Image (cartoon, helix red, strand yellow):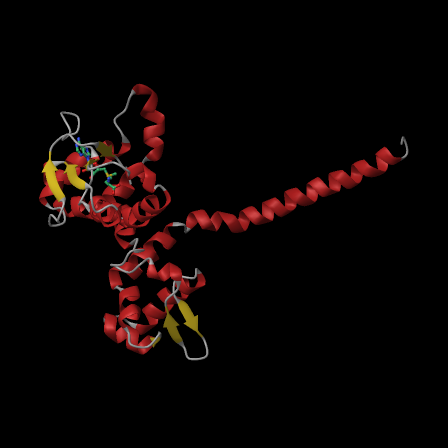
Length: 268
Ligand SMILES: C[S@@+](CC[C@H](N)C(=O)[O-])C[C@H]1O[C@@H](n2cnc3c(N)ncnc32)[C@H](O)[C@@H]1O
């Protein structure tokens, strides 16, 4: 044993030094993820703004050539090729080298402006200057939090998110549409996996129900439920048209909530 120890130690030291060298080399590469991390968000937003996924989806063939796509989108082909190369590398769209055409992937379909798996509105919401500004000032919040500073959204935008939305109808609509993206995935799963939760419920109030997507979906699964979509007045004013069995009621949940057998509350 006494002979073995000195031989093992240098090996271990060499191994540690090797690991540190590897980590140092890795750091030189990884740091670029943080220097240029914003590009992923920016290029995905660009794809939504241009309507790339919608154009490919409505194309009669499963894949589309660059000249055709750029003419449909009114884009410069060489810029579009670079954007698509960036996206295809992340499995957002697929490039077929043999035909030099592009097709959808499961991920690129999330960028469609409509459809049950669309997440486009959520991405558009989170990339607005109003939503990004609080994140970009996170350090000031951390430094001031002990002194009871207002939330970062208030510092950046002058009001809390709901008052800001009331004053900015475009932002309010984007929040509603973004929330509905998640709702279209989560609520059908809830209805399928936990139907017992809704047994015996004849009336349900969705508190902070946004544009009413949740109750529409719940009514599809449990058509006997009568729903009240309850949200701030400016939200219900712009909600989906009322449908059979669902009414919209505007108000402030901190003052009172319409009576029902059950209250539903989902926060994004
Ligand atoms: C995070 S969103 C969730 C929306 C929806 N439940 C969903 O999951 O898709 C929160 C909702 O609460 C609403 N809200 C905020 N403050 C409220 C209040 N005081 N009274 C009623 N609704 C309120 C907002 O307008 C917004 O629609």
